[in-house]
Image 1 (tube, one colour):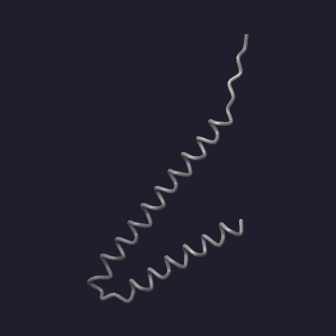
Image 2 (cartoon, rainbow, N blue to C red):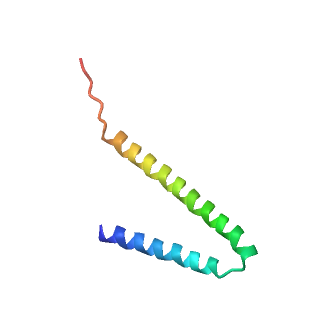
Length: 70
């Protein structure tokens, strides 16, 4: 659990750093960059969500045992 929290905090810091650097850009450059950031984060979220769901399904399938009834 500590490792997961540490990883979350590191990711948050990276995202905050990205925001700070983006905010320093001139407006005409900043707006497209902010849109790309949103798309990147949304895509990562969707991809990881699909990965976790697939992983959970595979784990459940491995636990199911076939029992023959005569």
